[in-house]
Image (cartoon, rainbow, N blue to C red; front, side, top):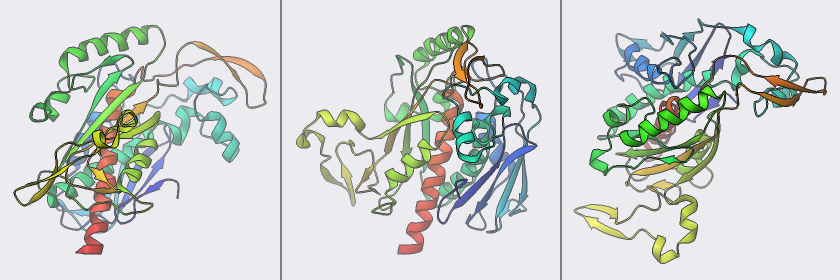
Length: 361
């Protein structure tokens, strides 16, 4: 069950980084949702390797194949199977990792849990597993757009190490702005500084991390299942399941701890026939249930664990050694993590939307 997510809109991903292919099965997608392979491919192209000078140069086209569940451009309501074949495998780059554990990777912990692991690329622990999530997220997004007027999810790089983007006013924060630079940030000036830093770090055989912020619009009040399936709890689980994620905060987050209750509370007011809040320190969720305001959260991503410098480690026979990693890796995961964050939002919200509809009609 560890490879499945969701209750009514449920996905199961499969495949290893350097195996024949990776993919996903989506169960619970409503019928008659317009869907083409191009809808899925557009999102996969945003996360694929080799798309710019600041990401891994691994050459994968990541071409999606829909195997089931779609006929004549409409979903059937039956399980949707999607396959993406791996075409640029280089197991030779991981020969040393058969014995030596890469620092801060899942090599040791997979061995400790299973007593066996896919050495090449980390197998299931590789970010290549997220192909299935992004493909399924593209379908979840179609479900939400079909049923929720004005639904939009915009994730962007907020910081790279110590460089922070200035977030524009709501009307100016658009997908076109975010996609206008290879970092996928909302600030063109900060983007140039971020690119310069990532390129510098890459030449040093090192890596950097940062923060992705996400704004979700058009979510109606009422989504979320107290007590244990609170909407922010499921979003947190979804984000923390992404490779390299190390922190999650919503609304005011940790900064809210410095405020008093009077300062932090979001006061209500009537906007026509709608209940609104004058501020949004709750991040669009109160009591685990969406309140109709924008959902705003942030995810912290650590520096890529693979660095092309010699480090101390141990072998699978418990001997001290050193290891200089090889292979093709992102010096910063953030640009390719943006569509991953968005995909996980789509999946969580599609599931909660269907759960709300099934319970309340």
